[in-house]
Structures are given as structure tokens and as C-alpha cells.
Image (tube, rainbow, N blue to C red; front, side, top):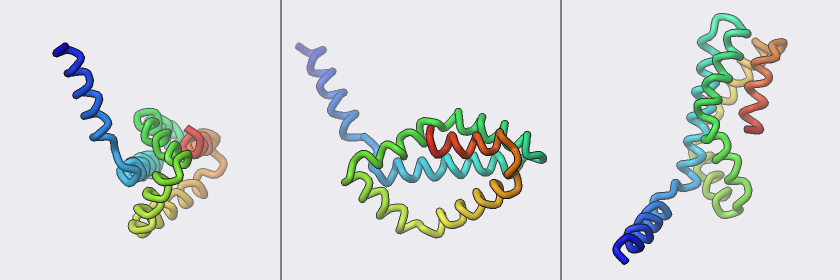
Length: 120
């Protein structure tokens, strides 16, 4: 009986500490920022693509979790409200992504990294 009680308490604690949609959206933003920063620091586009793919692999779950929010209307509304409240952060990241994409438009590894972020 005590073991069952511990399992039930442990499961309840895990559910109670599940991240909010806003936290998941923020983690997704942070993962995007890390991938883009890795590309920006690289000297060449080939190096950028490799660096971006390494960072993406390290943070893939954040991308998967952020995209999964789209499947739940209530969580999507919460994430959208959070993103709208922090729009300046996202506008800056979007401008950086566009600059990197433009700089390395001909590099397949950079294009692949951007594709991975869209469809992890």
C-alpha cells in the first residue's frame, strides 16, 4: 500500500508541475534564439549550418513542444497571448532570422536548419 501511495503522489506532482503554454512558448523562443545565435557567430555559411544543426539537435524537444501547442485550442490561446505580450522580443528574433537566411540563402545546411526548426 505505501508504494502505491508514493506512485500516486509522484504522478500528481508531475501533473501539477507541467509547464504552462506560455513557458513552452518561451522555451521555444529561447531555442530559436540559440540556433540563430549559433549561425550568426559562424564565420562562413557552411559553419553556420553545422553549428545551427548541432544546437537544434540539443534543443529539439523545445521545438517539438512548442509546435504541439497548436493541437490544443486553449493552450494555443494562452501561448498566443504570451507571444503578443512579448512581441518586441519576437520581432527582433525574426529580423535576425531573416538576415541570416538572406546571408546564407545559397547554403543547403542553413536552409536545412531553418526547415528543422519549422518541422522538428
